[in-house]
Length: 354
Image (tube, rainbow, N blue to C red; front, side, top):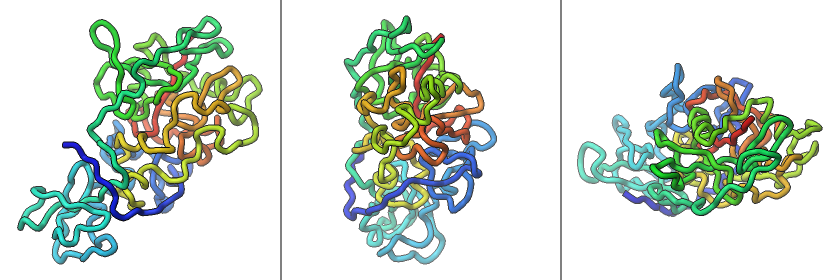
């Protein structure tokens, strides 16, 4: 069913999500944790494989909104019954109390017809079921320095000029793949395209497989740092002094807060939504920040999307469009809080080759 809800009450919230990972890493898109580390937890409602599978990042799942009602909503007597509608957590309450920034859905709760599943509205119009294909028709540029198409030479290796997009591998070739969706078990290949929407929602395992389909591989940490820092080991791709706005590095409002119209902690268990990277002033087209370029000519190594490396324990680098500070500055930004099965709206990649 198509869903395009519009906020009736605009909630103005700002700031970045500084939940620290055990004092080591700030989680991609994580909420303020009140000092609790979220290292290795499930960020998007998509379980990290291994011992931490099934633990939600915000410390709450579908029931987090249960309990005292939102402002202006009467508190129901008796036990709280939780529910889920359209992937959003809610509570079973009287429709008369489900107003303002919340919407009722019938047929999901026990009891009388007026007791319905009350969930937050999204704050912007977005069709969660649409699969836009903004990269259709784009092709890779010729390689530089003897490198494959879409790549350029850095010392003894090649690196993608742009953050990767995906194409689906089909009989007889490839077709575009929507950059707002996790590929799941779909066979996909990485492309390095100028002016494309790069793919977030990608795990480290999927990124490695997509590079291999292209005859490439994920960059090692040493290669990634060399590509970003250049021959003189600068802190940022463009030099040693931070220049705000040169890269896509500091969105003023977290996209989950904007999408759901609330800063309640449950929203950070739903950061797999395809709508997050479709919001205005969020994810940028590859190469659209001309100053955010390395010495050899690779774009967006700082900001835009986190980029997976070949570390088998799980590492992504460079920050993303909300933050390039909390885990280190610019090229030195590194997150090691998740294993390679993790993905959310902020996780992307680029490939290297020998």
